Image (cartoon, rainbow, N blue to C red):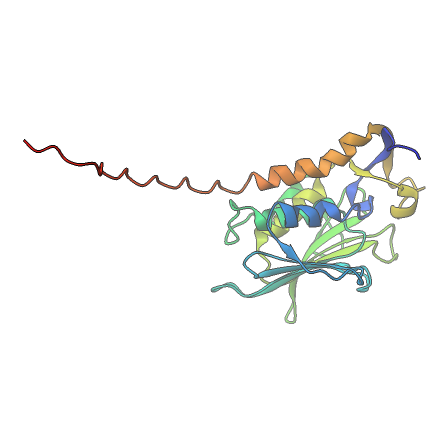
Length: 259
């Protein structure tokens, strides 16, 4: 019987839009443990369904559900109509986590938000040659706000080359709060390499010059604690419960001395 390995081989891949999906637990575990989202118990189905504490949002991860493995639905609330987003299997979990983190952050106001194009422009994304969207510096990732008589949505997509099928797509429906779309585009534009394991099996661009990757031997404990650190940091965003007031001390009940 052998013990646990002391080190783990990790690849750090860039750009992240071609780095593959990554570990879904980066999204699902913090939602459950740090943000209080509940999950059903359906061990016979290869899916995860999480619902927010107020039951207004539902996240579904279902690998068998066509190309869009991830779906986030939010019901109508007050004067805000219902909205939804979906993400393909190869969407980097770091970008999906950015949406989930913004949605669950007590400091986030869904009524405000910057232009989702701004983080991309700041990262040197350029106007697309034939549409109104923006394209990444390597020409492989694309984001567009599509407004027609029949549609009003944001679309993000990545391909390995012209005329090839998308590696992944993300779709934000009409009424999706711009602050959430901006969180996604900010994470998408981040040039920091992302950690991945088994990239020969999980990274579509593996073996091409479209990505760069650096392999490192990391302590197994460090790899295992990364998710725990993330859960802890997100849990700390919650305001501390108010300290209950102490009731006043009752007056003494002993016999009173008479003069």
